[in-house]
Amino acid sequence: MNDWLYRGAGFLRQQSLPARNALTAYWPLICLLQACALAVLLSYYWIEGASEFFEAVAGWKAAGGLALVAATTVVSGGVLPEIFKRFFRPDGVSAPTFGELMHQFVMWAILGVLVDGLYRLQSRLFGESSDLLAVLSKVAFDQLLFTPLVTLSFIVSWFMLFEARYGPKRWLLGLRLTNLRDRILPLWFMSLCYWPVMLLIIYSLPLALQFPLFLFSNAAFSVLMIFVARRQVLGER
Image 1 (tube, helix red, strand yellow):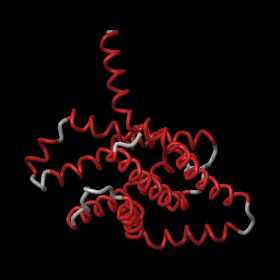
Image 2: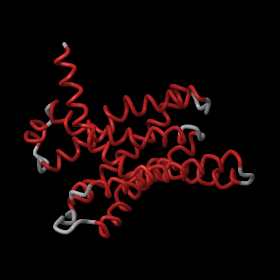
Image 3: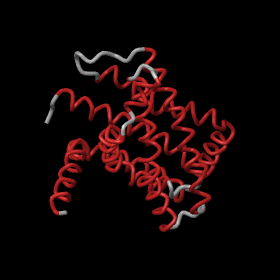
């Protein structure tokens, strides 16, 4: 039993190493991004007249529906990071092909719809109150259940589909539990370094404003991952 626990702890340490390295190197940037999100929250509740702007944002999102949700997520998670990659891509790393970009953009569109659905589901499960218990319940549900079981599982499976060149048999063979585990866990640990604090802020806003703030947070996280990946490729310490 002790040997099993020791090996399990060693495995988790190895899987969390990229996240721990990223947190050590980029904690000032992570804190800055979270402070920006906090400023949005405080302005909503404390700055007189800000409610008109936020109501306009909420109306814009409601009028656009799922089409706008999908399109804006593609921009925040796909287009903006690709623009940054053109400036920070390491030498020797080729740019993605048109097919690869389209594959990623479709993924982001689907993820946007999933996240918007999650926010609406949680408003039914835990209510629309911004009290501490409701907010903590939403963060826990998001990060401990939805993120590893839905979001990251979908992302990993989607990239594996591209790697299999859309061959169903080859793709299904790659969806082994150990493969999924080894690819999901590092991403999950990375997510836990960034998203819990962001989600405390997001879920403290009314439902209509949660997704717009998610777009900012998602764009910032995607760009942050570019710097993390670049650091790993260049072997920087």
